[in-house]
Image (spheres, helix red, strand yellow):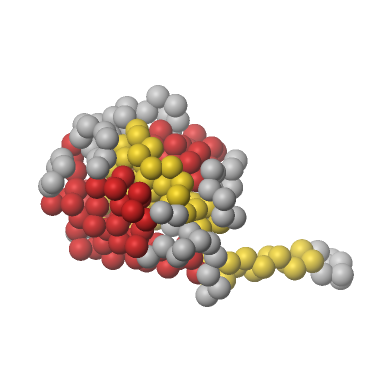
Length: 212
């Protein structure tokens, strides 16, 4: 039979699609929340290894892939600092779907979506209309979604946090919560370490295992 072991320490190159919430509740360009998100995202980019890739997807009511998958950090940082979407609603589910589709374009074997929001879907999605649709789309492509709940979405009892937890668990990712701007920056560092240090070994044994 085949035994699979997942562990950590051996770094793997990653292709990560980052979806960044630029909705009105984030405060708009230049606000404390918006600048903290940019600082946290840029910190993640700066921690990428030379063979890693990332893409930047900014969203509110609309969704913009402001930088496709690349290893060029300057391009990624520019897309973080110069988002092209207006600060209005929250097309959360569609943004996650675009994140999955974008992650799929990466050339590294390890792919993931890092989805950040301070709220929840408010009816702006027109493609993936439920958490279940997001999970189905992501698992069908073998891409985990690591979710970050910021502010009100960080509360474990909020409906937004519940959705983020379910999406992360359902796709093989992890849910993180950041109640403050300082915590947000620290979280992106944790996710960077988690993604780069995970590895899997598949071992096919000549012995046939019998159970029961």
